[in-house]
Image (cartoon, rainbow, N blue to C red; front, side):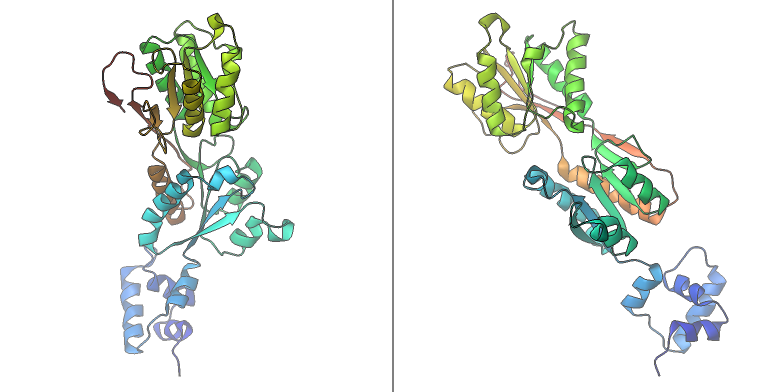
Length: 346
């Protein structure tokens, strides 16, 4: 007859839950009790199955990565895969699988909270701040369910990690100012989006610190893609010569690539007449002509840090939430470098 946890509990004169905790080496059980229960298990030739161990821990050994499948830019880019690899680099060795799930799958009956959290199909959740809401955060906190937000999220109690995008905007703008540029435009990015707002805040703050005011005519917002870079430069070239910017701060590499292409077609020398700097270093910055000055944001490290923080939340679900801002790295290349000195500053 197959020996069960109940048989071990009866023989060791302890509760069934105590046997489960001994199997999982819980620190809440005394060493004396552990030795007694383990002796009984050995005597009765009992080996816990992996399924029993999982159930005893109430763990699925599965984590959720929540995305918005309605936004192609959220998952059809290399940064998304870098983040996933970063998460797996931490959670994989701990035997956790990673489940990709869309926040918009189905209606109320298949809402991710019911589908994944309440069903205990996952042990923890990672989501970016573009889809996290205060309502979701409050519900997860009420359930004492471990979750981590990628991106600043101070509006509700949560554990989050992000690169300091405001500081990144400051770093790029300060670099352009030190190279002698004064009429600096900010192109790409949608107003109201958290990422855009943080980057733009750093840009605007640094200009004001230098005694300059952001020029509304120089701020061309829109999708963060190559076409927007092209459209932005075309629109800025329609300004009279005295009003045209002498430098561009681009929301990302794709915007910068379009901007550089349009400037080249218009016969505008870069960096002599127009400096171009951009957030993100991938995929074009080192390979364009001229190479683009950029702010390197290590999305692999972002994913790994989010994975670390989630493991911490799973281990100690009642611990206080914490937040972390990682530091970006400024990589100076030819597209802005009027001084001729090489540079790579972190």
